[in-house]
Length: 167
Image 1 (cartoon, rainbow, N blue to C red):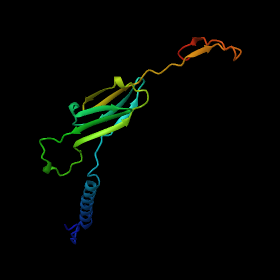
Image 2: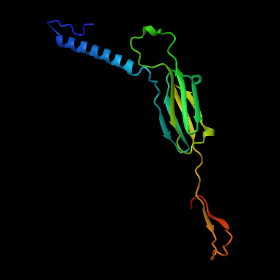
Image 3: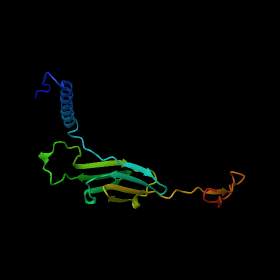
Image 4: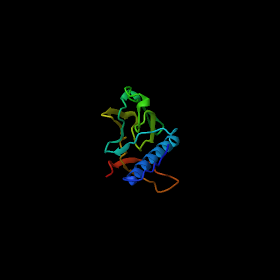
């Protein structure tokens, strides 16, 4: 490969710019292939909080529900899947391939107060939505305790609820 072919005359600067661009593209593609050969991709996602639930939204174009596996172990949510390449395009016909194909996984720690027994997930228009309902929050209670005047003869502890719901 001859990266620079000098031709005296018109547009030599434009030729140099094009050839430098080709050289940089070639170099970046080569470096990317070697650096990320063993790295597994994972899709980006957004986790947001609503009043009654947390929601995890992951864009997964080309991934169907039957290619997804969602598991919870301890306090960790793991989403696994696989993106299949289009069957109509032979592998050797690609000139540039920026969308990755193959298996992937995404793991994240569950937010506090998630009701694990009520988690649900759905795929629609290439978006995975995992709903993580919250457990009901404990309401503080105020309790009056009657106290005796001596350690020798302590009063029996009698409790009565004075207020509920944090008032």
